Length: 290
Image (cartoon, rainbow, N blue to C red; front, side):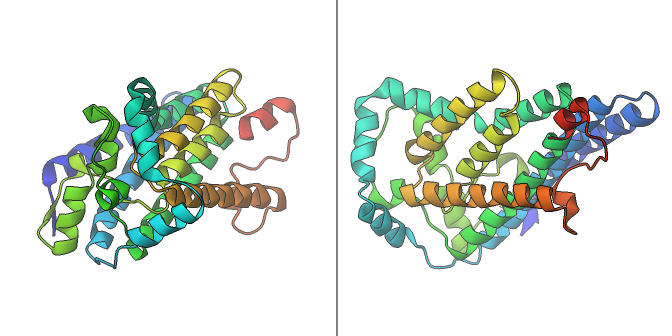
């Protein structure tokens, strides 16, 4: 397999510019907030690109699909996915708003970087980056071992919400997933990477850590909580996830956040997970690092 050079060089250029900016904000003029914004953005972009390539490569393993098991489990929980989709179809305004919420997760990452950087919550910013770095490859590995095509392909509903925006996140992965599993997709275009993970839902993981990251910020934290609650709900229809994907993503995010809290209290050898340390206990420092 090959990586299309155009998208690769664009990412390399963007990351290098961000690293140069971070260096300038450190050596030429001390701007800790701007330096943290530049460095964290470079880290997120570079890491996401690398994991995206890894994600596509793991899909070529073509492990047996587990859609039937996911569908049976959600039915056992009393959830009827097809009936829920029919409800969304009958309420197009609600469906569209949920789709908007679902597609807000990408812009919200930059919101976290800007808001936490601007408010000097740099420790929390880097905690968010570390949680992202831990959760993304973990969901990819689980998906590689337990792949699924998603409920739109499995149930093949006769009626779906009207509008491209409402279903693009639910079906746009099917073409590359099929090409990777049968060996016909040979070129990875970083400018057209599509999320292939169904189980567990990374959108739910991202919604949880985004809401957590912004929680201490007045007003924005409350709005982020509401928006990301909608993201979790929208992942079923707009994202094309089984209820089991949502629950698994929530459990995974909960474990990650709980681990972060325990590590931060106990300060074990994996101290890099806990964020910047300080021996001071003044309120400004606490607000900055927590």
